[in-house]
Length: 218
Figure (tube, rainbow, N blue to C red):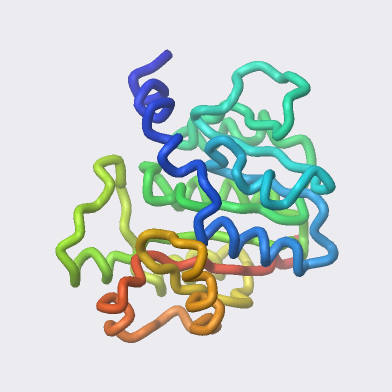
């Protein structure tokens, strides 16, 4: 086991709970009646699969995943997301919904991971859900970032990257620090299409955002 794998085997369990971001993602997938298959990139232990239930075809990819195929549910396969070219070896078909949740900030080349995921996994017209850590929050408030973060994001930059891959933004959710489930109500109240939100959001504790988009025809 590599040093990076060992680090995430010990670190990942901190995030394997049904926090607000995952609950919002599950809500968006359930409300799309055409979404029956889900690819979860950066899946951890597959908490999203438990929120959705076994009626969905689910594949999770994570550095803490299983290196050999087996029959356990949910299916979580090993994938080093710093090597996005390996995605194509694990993805056998396009998915109705593709999730990149809590992952882009940890990879060296987030644009390459986003591009490879969309090209390899998202069906035409499929649902794409992408979260991004807000640089504005961490520049504004003296909060300690995660030591493994390699990126923080300006929202227009993420939006431009999604639109570059023919993804149309349907909703943008602000997400409150702490991830408490009750903050879903705030996220849904302040959801909008715009990728430019005023600086006062940082002072209210919004530390990341969830983009909900729709893939174009390819």
